[in-house]
Image 1 (spheres, rainbow, N blue to C red):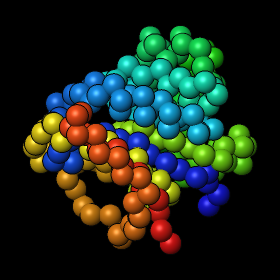
Image 2: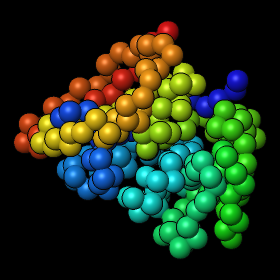
Image 3: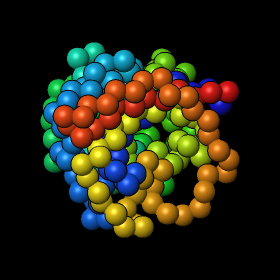
Image 4: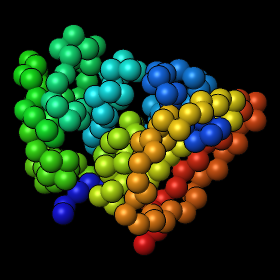
Length: 205
């Protein structure tokens, strides 16, 4: 399939979780981590996030270059009152993989599979670099498709979430991926004063 280069960005606790069992929203990492998140956005033609993460974190997905803002939902149900729909920024594309998204003024809706949507972004919208900011289920879908080219992590050693049901970057529990994915470390920045380490990895062939 034809797809853009895909990067993902997550903050993980000391035990490798992206949130608690209850789905704690963002805000548990440092200001420096948030600044890094904004810097990573600036290299992308499109940003992508799962609906659950969008709602939990009240994201508006803004960046100076106004990339496309892509939101993915299995059922295609979106809250018209969410601030992303009233915040200036790049065009908003809503994807419902299991149902037609509800129409929200100012957005473009799609009902298709995730692979078909990625191909649409690449071929029809000219997206060369897609940057995903969660959540774990979307991360797992991209990993199962073997389409992740870069991983950016903030390892937050000051936080322990615990719980077998707490999700990691490829969701919680469940089966292993069909095969291992090999990456090489390209950036290692320990911030001892913050209790965090900024890491980047690149896919190897």
